[in-house]
Image 1 (cartoon, one colour):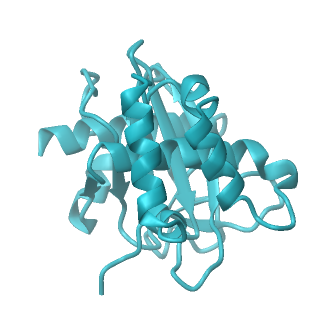
Image 2 (cartoon, rainbow, N blue to C red):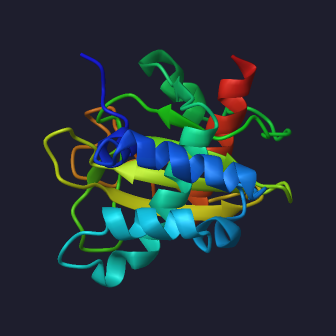
Length: 216
């Protein structure tokens, strides 16, 4: 069964003609889709924000909603590119043999990860959720926007997202000496799971995914 793409779950609620018109207007007005401020100040994006906003408002999730829409527009405009990390390659992505640093400017794309193998939570006390994938948006200054999409399911009304942006982190180490992406969840190691801890690990994972997909 084909897995849902989180941007499809949101954009499919729109009139396709409306979405096409917004993207054409952004192109006509020479808006760089990598520039969030320019995109979200454009009249077309403002209209989409209004149409997609939940009836009961956004509350504390406003920043995440804006980030999600920006990535969705960039993904749509770039041709809806989807890459995958197969289960047998996940160990390379999260292990010590990950790709070395290099140029990751390969355009916006969504990278699906093996289902329910890598988990995370946004804050201490939150429930752990499976990481469905990462949207990667290389920026003009050489940094990378990484949007993590957790808990993606076609029967769920929404999803959980977290975004980081920056150059590839330097040498990372957990305070307890555990390897990066090692699970802290009870039973996680025995089940062969991995876990994201903190923004730096998410950013590092995004860079690894970008480089790994380019090498394949």
